[in-house]
Amino acid sequence: MSPTKPYRRVVRHVTTGFAAVLVFLALIVPDQITRLPPGNSPWTALLRIPLEALIAGAVLLLLPKKGRRPIVIGLGVTLGLLTVIKMIDIGFYAVLARRFDPVLDWALFDDGFNFLVDSIGKAATIGVTIGIMVGAVLLAAGMTWAVLRLDTVMRGHRTGSWRGLGTAGVAWAVLAGLGVQLIGGLPVASHAAADLAGHTVMALPQNLADRKRFAAEVQIDNYRDRDADQMLTALRDKDVIISFIESYGRDAIENPAYNGAVLASLQANGDKLTAAGYASRSGWLSSPTAGGGSWLAHSTFLSGLWIDNEQRYRSLVSSDRLTLTRAFADAGHRAVGVQPGIVFAWPEGRFYGYDHIYDSHTLGYQGPTFSWSPMPDQFVMSAFQQLEYGKNDRGRLMAEITLTSSHTPWAPVPSMLPWDQVGDGTVYGPMVERAESTGSVWKNDERIRTEYARSLAYSMDSLLGHMAEYGGDDLVMVFLGDHQPASVVVGAEATRDVPITIIAKDPKTLDRINGWGWNEGLKPEPAAPVWRMDTFRDRFLAAFGPEGDPH
Image 1: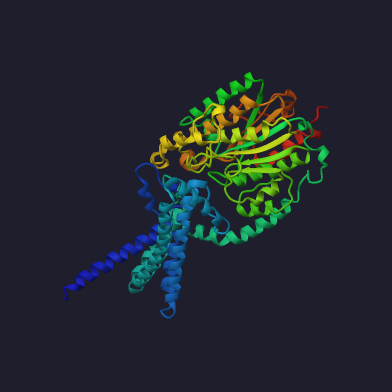
Image 2: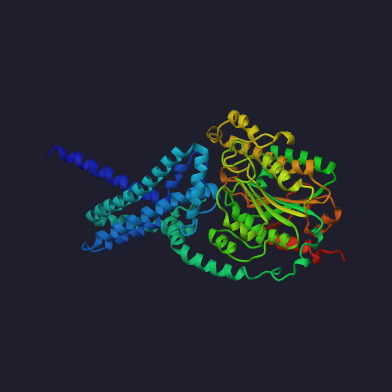
């Protein structure tokens, strides 16, 4: 016997085993890390039988020798691509609490790239991106090789292969019939890859059907033909601020692991506003998104339509749908958008009907960025005071203000300053230099949650502090969260609820929403009603239009 033959035999066995493990893992690993069995037993997820392996094995054994290689390669490439999509799904579930849409979600990779730039720098981000792309190609190629290798082995051991497939098939049928599951809820009789393939294949027809549904939905509008003098009649003599606080979700109020800073801020600001003569009512809305995609929540809230994907968003901003902001402009208010997070051209702004838009380039900020946030929220409110609200010769004002200091990655978090020291923002330079780095914070999940809560408290202090400091008797404020934060903060099972509050001095303003069931104060109670976010526009227009007049 040649001395090289045992060596070759060992290499064949090792490569065959590696190919089997690679294919097996591709088929049974779930697309959500949180579905792995908890504690020290995630390895038990390996105790599954993948249906796809049984079907593919039978197909390979039945194929004739002639012309089989292209089919085998096709199976390998398909499994490789599905595995890449599964890896993307894992990331999407971790951040956005949903799976990747292979038709609509490609635009979100640009946001992911920018987030990494803010977190680890541009050079490192480019390196990571290249690494991911090379890894995806190698994964697809490796999976193709693995399927080819297993096909060769099965053809050489046809009888044993049929016996193994038959035994595993019977076991799969019994386990599926009994509904046997692992501790994390994963079925032992697995069909995860088939489900993923079905979702991927059906994405295009489902999106086409949704486009048709949305085209019909956008035409249904009780306020489309309403005369401007019959809109928002109860707010004609009021200034109105509508403000979105980034990542302000239900868990920020109710999760005792990190809600302390948020509750303290709500209590302190509530006391200040009460002392200034303001009252408030609070409830909950259910957001169309989680972990990101703020523009989907903003457009849902302002348009009264459920916008939960990019296709709906693009269709909406190309329509003439009436938004709350446009309704105020039609009713005679000067409508301004204060959007510090806008750093590029934003043609969608025209859809919302603003008379003027302030973005990151036109607010006058000369200080450093705070990771993703181009400028601190207190500066935004200070600039709003100088550019719009504090003017003596203005008419009625409606401002939609988006606050970004509580945007991921929640580090560094600014500190509040006396309002007369904010200036052009250069004062924030030393604050950033002294701050702990984003990378340091993100090494520890507990620190991430703590800094998330601190950033929210800062956003609230900025917004509500401005109202307490500068708000007039005729100011009405609506502030809300756009979505819950990423699952690294709230977990995978969190609701999509966000708080919403209306603040006013005039008792007649809040009397108009007495029928809503909202509780008093800045903090919605657990039992307060939860509405879909797209229902708010019509409720608000009805409450503050002629329909809401006391009878």
